[in-house]
Amino acid sequence: MHPYENYDLRENDPYLIPGSECLKNLLGAKDTTRLNLLERQISGAMLVSLNQSPIPPTFDLEHLCKIHHRLFSRVYPFAGKVREVEIAKGGRLFLPHNLIYSVSEKTFAELKRENYLQGYDQDKFCQRVGYYFGCINTIHPFREGNGRTQRILIDQLAELNGYEINWSAMSGHAIAEASAAVLAGDKSGKGLARLVRINLSRI
Ligand SMILES: Nc1ncnc2c1ncn2[C@@H]1O[C@H](COP(=O)(O)OP(=O)(O)OP(=O)(O)O)[C@@H](O)[C@H]1O
Ligand SMILES: [Mg+2]
Image (cartoon, rainbow, N blue to C red; front, side, top):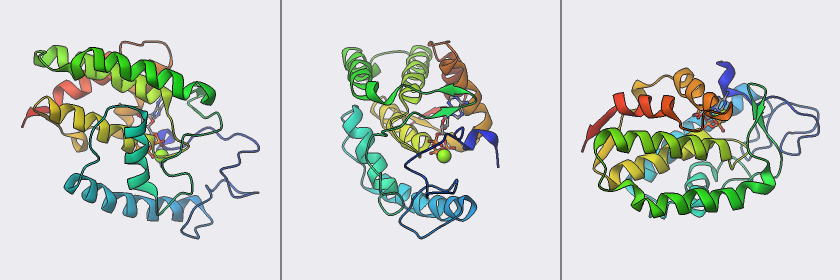
């Protein structure tokens, strides 16, 4: 398992089965290996369903919550719900949970003011997608499943602009590194922009 898959462990996490490192779940799984296996299968199937009947893209926190709910409602009791704990990866905290609503509002209002990136050339589009991708990842609204959820919103943003992103050509490690750089202070998201740029095609 790659280290980026795991959140740093914290004491008294109410999302965990007491006395274990496994997330509470609706599948009866008691260990993380089994949970991850089932969770990947189910969310994979739900991803296909989401592609067939997408959530109407409103590009806001509610949109993210609806995507998260579709992916994980059979897996996690917190599907579609904003987290109520602090979480960290690589020794750095994501946004404090009590700021998730306000910062999301600000971020998505900025995206709206930018007309959802319509009318930019390809380089500028990638630069701005990298920035918003980094912002959304730093918000990290959910206790688990943020990566898959945010990539679907970014896909819908790309589609609106006539593009498709080939995520399967990117390594999870590369996405994690570029995401970590934003959390460490480089708010431009240029690493994420570069990844999108080399894996972008016109629809
Ligand atoms: N060290 C890090 N710092 C900041 N962000 C990170 C770091 N490592 C990974 N990430 C981001 O977190 C996402 C994973 O979050 P999470 O585990 O909640 O979602 P997921 O859907 O299970 O993951 P995945 O993206 O692996 O499918 C990654 O896709 C990446 O964007
Ligand atoms: Mg995960």
